[in-house]
Amino acid sequence: MNIQDYKGVFVFAQQVDNELSGIALELVGKGKDLAKDLGTEVTAVLVGSGVKGLADTLAEYGADKVIVVDDPELAEYRTEPYAHALASVINEFKPEIFLVGATAIGRDLGPRVSARIHTGLTADCTQLEIGDFPINPVPGKEQLHNQLLMTRPAFGGNTIATIACPAFRPQMATVRPGVMQKADREVGKKAVVVEYNPGFTPDNKYVEILKVVKAVSDVADIMDAKILVSGGRGVGSPENFKILEDLAEVLGGTVSCSRAVVDAGWKPKDLQVGQTGKTVRPNVYFAIGISGAIQHVAGMEESDIIIAINKDETAPIFEVADYGIVGDLNKIVPALTEKLKAELAGK
Image (tube, rainbow, N blue to C red; front, side, top):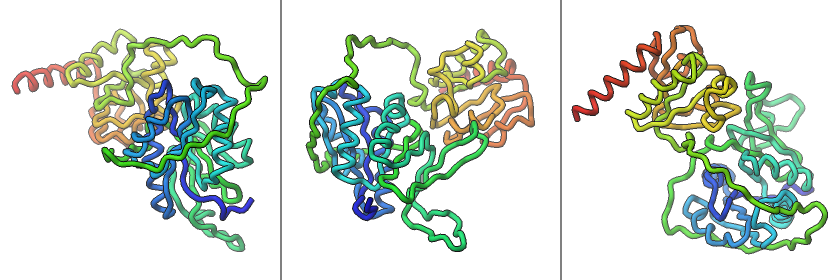
């Protein structure tokens, strides 16, 4: 492998039912930053059937080039044809960096593609940057420049590991949804569109999809919420979440929760914030009855304003909170709700 042959930052632009997933635009935004540091371009790889029309959206969010792999075999996600499509794109265009979203699709696809092209993969990254490796110079060892430094939680979130892949290309990572930010949209911006089809020959590894049954859920997507009222084990019971729901209603926000609440069966998994839940970045985050374990903090610490309410003044949540209230949430939250109602009614 001649590493010098590999250039550019590529991202997998995940789409489902011909609609781009949020992570696709987040990765284009991050890819744009990385490409700027390297003096190169960001390319989105769009895989599906009849998806060429999505290229303009990717361009408006920062993609310099869009490679479209369009084939009827790619109409629905299946591991084998999608892995073949991405591996073929990488072998043909030789990117220096390749990013995939750590979604259900990405976590299935990323490792298979990296194995086919014989490179490493750092999974579930929360931070990406261009820098030197080793980060701290080691006597007698060459320090390589312009390496992708991939940071992810390790050992259950108790430590943070920064990983590099200096000897192989592309440098591959899967990235948690909600961690990176989309670039500002430039309406009307165009990208170079390259159509590429490696050819697909179904074999015994191709899964046949007999029927697609879509789940219907009335649970709000907490990743889109501007205001989150999040409850933990300290709320006391599923019935007691009513006071959080009242506060969220007054603020026009959404209720979310910690892992302990989901494990107890009080709330569905879709509402969980944290390392094993969703990463959120609202304008205001209320942490009510949440102790502040590192696994939870990892999913909400980028919120603009964090307000913590907890009876334990030594709770770790106060270390990341902008505002903290020590006391009984059963008294504080209803009082806050009534005060906000009065204030809003007076406007």
